[in-house]
Image (cartoon, rainbow, N blue to C red; front, side, top):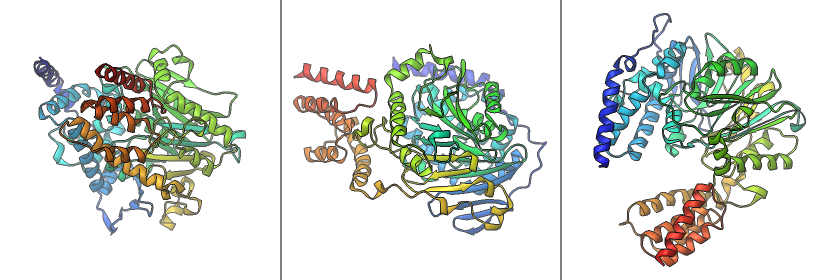
Length: 552
């Protein structure tokens, strides 16, 4: 019955996608843009350039790229400089999809579904962004043309966060951000910190890119992401306006619209203050729910723009000098939103919000170093040990990157691997978008860097890294009844991260599957004594325990 259902579903989407062939074959108009095909010169194994456009890898292993020109030229320059990195990133992403969906039939079904779902995306992407994506796509791999032609595929990838969020109604990102000013900072200026807890595997996070973009039209800006990404998830422009995004709870829309990262790119490129950012956000139709924390040097404060397919709100703290952003909405527009209420009740978003309040009471008069310590905090409420990697912590030990902004000074600190534990590298946008950078040949302002977290040198960190490796072995044993684990392995696994509920839950599931119900009962009961990440997680353990007791 299930196979028959999937077949008819596949047939339906195939017919629909054939009916929308005109839209999915869309190619942007690029004739109005002048173009010089980049001829890349290699300086050494990690430094390349074309005229004023540069790509280099710094000693902290962050890739730094500087590009300038019209939209089409920006795309070509970016693609030509990062071609190897971009194709490698694409290979990582699609091989991850193949891991999640190993069946060729289901992969074909998914392709047809996404082709139909994305059929109108181009109608919601600005013409200049389409031109830039087209230029970038010319350096994409032919290997994945069976999924979609290069331009469409690159455009779809810019909506991957949104599509995964919409289709699965999942929080692939459980990010945390905060902004403080006036009495809450050392110098009274606005200071912003954010963790981007987006995880698609260690390999995906390996090549981080700090982009410095000088568009022909608009405001120069910095963005932190990965190869092949022109959208913005964390960034600041030369006017001292910042944007960061945090996922919210979404309903599932019927078609893809404007990817959030392209909306935030537009804000960075064209907004000088909060009012202009709000005006831009109101114009675009999005297809997931997202909080956009916008900080502004010109306004000397920050607000949260809250967007969703059917609603729009702005959370302005007015008389306060601090604003926190996790993964639920706070504006009046969402007060009666049932999805948002459920998110607050069941997820770890409210817990992290309260933890931020607690940390700010302990850390007064914030400066960049203190902000870094907040972003790196690995503990629960009242400094309770809740296990490393627990999503209730501000630092979930899986972040793609963390960023600290000082908008008034135009300074940005970007974390280096692993997670947000490595050295924070400082960049001065006043220098980078001026002749001074060209003369010095350097991007970073190294004397202002923030040192790596001492946690990196501890046995606990080594244990955590081993725990992550062994977790995959444990999960494989649960997925495959033929894989057996001995008791010593299980005890060692639990000792690597003893305060984390997950180590006992996984052990309980393993014992349950192998009909060792007395031992399963012990493990499930242990898990329930720990700080469990979400209400659904806790309910799931309780169900397993109830089933175990019946077996006994």
